[in-house]
Amino acid sequence: MTTKTRYFVIASLLVMGVGLGTGLVAYYVGLPMGAFQRRGGPEELQFIPRDATVIAFANVQEVMNSELRQKIRRVVPMQENGQREFENQTGINIETDIDRVVASLNPDPDSTNVPGAGMVLARGRFDEVKIEALMRDHGAQVEDYKTKRLIVADLPATAPPVSASGLSVAFLEPGLVAVGSTKLIRRAIDLHQSGDNPQTGLQSVTGNEELMNLVRSLDGGNVWAVGRFDALTSQAHLPQNVSGQLPAITWFSVSGRVNGGIRGMIRAEARDDEAANNLRDVVRGFMALAKMQTGSRPELQAMMQSFELGGTGKTVALSFAVPAEVFDMVPGASRKMPAPKPPVH
Amino acid sequence: MTQPETPRVTPTVFASSARVFDLSLGQMLWSRRSVFLGLLLGGPVLLALALRVVSVLYASGFRINGAQAAGASVFGMMIWLLYIRFIVPVLGVFYGTSLIADEVDDKTITYLFTRPIPRRAVLFGKFLAYLVCTVLLVLPSVLLVFFLIVPIGGSSIGEAFPPLLSDLAMLAVGLTAYGAVFALVGTRLTRPLIVGLVFAFGWEPAVLLFPGYLKRLTVAYYLQALVKHEMPQDSTVSVLLQVFREVPSISTSVLALALIVGVTLWLAGRAVEQREFVLDQ
Image (cartoon, rainbow over all chains, first blue to last red; front, side, top):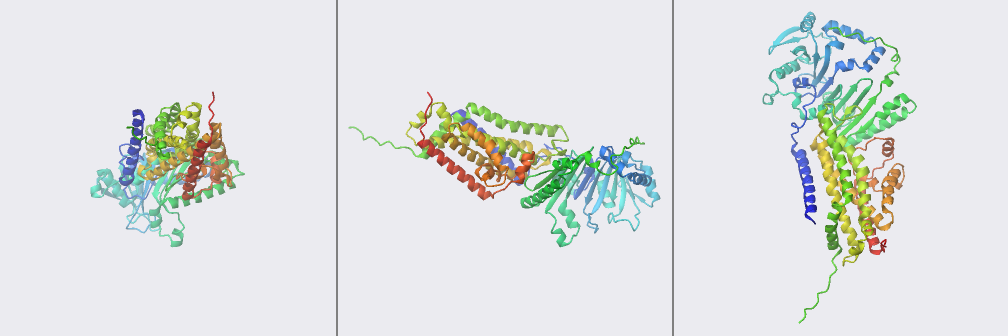
């Protein structure tokens, strides 16, 4: 063997050794990827407590201005009345005042509510005085909590139980309102004031590496949600025969980009490779059935062709694209619609 | 006083193969064919680098159907489309068929066959050199692609590592099996390259498309059963492949591939021992 060949063999073995060694270290003790990766996700995540089981995001402006939304407005015009009522109640015009929302569900040990406690963080343009006055008119109480004004709503007895601690609204900073469980709002204020402090048990969801990895993978969508499927089902107290039929999924994520149509991806992480294979088989079966059913409908065929099953190991991924033409099939969707009104500030 | 002459001992097949391997590895690595091999294996690495740069520079990253693709899925797709369906069969065809044919074309086979070593050791030594040469190039290329692609979209290197190990083992097995089959083709037939290309890119993909037993006469049928990644549905052909895909068990596949390697190498060795190689003047 010549020296040149020997050097080549050594270099090649070195690359393999380093690669496999790094992989082994990553497998057994994890690899600190923070230096190489973006934190990912919207900045509001830093106000959501670490134990969140579900996080959802929507870029309201993009969705509201999308061609799809205009089509839906043609089909369901009464939604406008609902929006107007919401505006009268809160002083917030969803179309123009909210830029984006981040919602979370966290376990609530003091409550028997199925999904736990919830919170919505909305960023946009809000008239704080008007909103506070409107809520006071509806019986809300205002408390001071760490220099922030916490507006605790007076919920009617018939209202659905939001949380054992009640419903509150707080303006964390100009242009950022938090609405939801009082307990969660207090923790959001704590996180806003002090930031992450794991020693005191105060940590935001950005420190939850497992969940943030999923969030990072969805960064491009204008609507998405990620969550722990097993945590949700365990809180749901389902009957044994129902819970036994559910797929063995630990994490799920749904991501979409709404514009003319919807492009998206549904991803599930199964408990093990076998569960993932079973889930893939089920999805594949449904896809084949759906493709057969839509064989005679060309407008649906494009959508069905876009369905692609993927994923490796424990991950099952299904990507899809619903073209704008699909929504034309809804009666009334093809009607001409007047141009949307310019936003009122 | 004259010393008694020591009888000349013919070296064993193993020792002879090792010697031929030692000579052939350097020849194989620094041949013109290696430029082709470098381009073939540099392609996926460059592609992975480009995808990584895109994912770093643009927040939206690399997308499939509008959704940001997870690095582990992209890596699985690359293993299927680039390595299993293209690189491994191509390397097998180009290197396997030329193991003996090159020596015949260069008219150097006589020098090897006149050495006091078993003729089949020439084939085995060259086959070993092919295997080491391709494995030392393919596996580092896969590792580089893995580390460039998997972190995209937040996939975890730790979680993707066990499937990587099976990918590496599967690729090594694939190179061995294809190399052995095409070594047999190279020793038996006069136009081995054409036959090899027809087998790898005509017969195998065509037979896998249809239901029936014919697919058992391919290497791909058993090799693809060892792949842990989901088969991509990039075209109508892929969808058909998925529909008619029968997946043999891993033990069946490994056993069948071992049988293919053993039988084809034995037949190739036998052909080298028996065939009269006629050199063009």
